[in-house]
Length: 405
Ligand code: 1CP
Image (tube, rainbow, N blue to C red):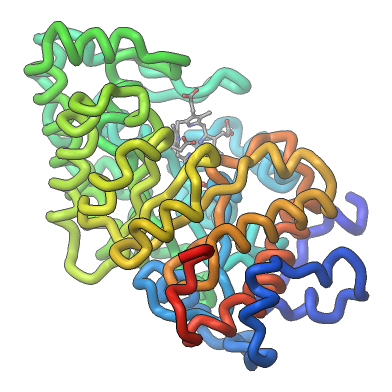
């Protein structure tokens, strides 16, 4: 393992080592932030105090810098993940073993000063607990042994006994003990519609044609499927919160495939019903790929934060809806397949686009891909912390804080 690949074994405060880096490209600032510079704000996190920057940003409270975490921050781009997965034998062997799941969750935090941990699991564990028989074949993605594509299978579907997902709640307990409050833990689930996509097709698909056909031919069946999923997911997420998750995220990866009316009926409505049933006060993030056209509706869904994919206009979204909801995103994950300098430029451009108003969480617009070089992730996290520290110092200044707003 080369020096640059070696994970740092200790958690570090954001900006800690970055501040000691020599001048050069890393001193670049987002132009919007330059104008807002007041003074160098004292560092909020001295090293071992709890870092609740993410939770404050989700609540749209001022933060000394923009918190950052990355979808799929634990995963195949990390050699230590690949090694542990090989040792465990399969994805499910990792995910169903609470201490291995905890170890994988913490791997990216040992390398990078990220502002959140996300539970290592998968959205498809819920349909697995419903009896569909999930497996992940190496290099192939998820496969279900049984599908719920016809009237009989959908009628027979019920909310699973949460005891079948006990390994998830146990993993949350282990992760929380290991984190000891250093950063918040994000729990998650798939949206009812995105789960339905995999349950109907039995695997991933480019267009989920069977599902979209069902939306026209048998909307009553799809209604029932997403209703059962909403009941299952709301119970599952509430239990994650009880086990210690500090924020909850819903992944609606495929909601953007639907026409607007179908999206509202089969994706947004069941998502809203989940949000309404979660414990009061816990921050929530709804990530919908292809959501740009539905922003007004998602902003009213009851979510604390909207996760945007990389095709959405973050600046516009913040100006238009930033008084009501926080935003998370939305760097194209393929920007990380370049070099540290290009990554830093892309990060600064996005921070500039977002503006300095509270309520922004930096992230990628979809999961990191396996070919991502870890040193580019390090450059990204350092750049976000450094540039946004200057930018956010202006949060209490007059003006909206939204770019051009
Ligand atoms: O070892 C492996 O095979 C690794 C690949 C992998 C990983 C690391 C899968 C298979 N799942 C995960 C973990 C995972 N999945 C997390 C962990 C936390 C994190 O670090 O972010 C999360 C939040 C998910 C969520 C998930 N799984 C989504 C929603 C987000 C997204 O990426 O759109 C979806 C659609 C899935 C299904 C899934 N699981 C795995 C794959 C390859 C897929 C996509 C399948 C497809 O449609 O082709």
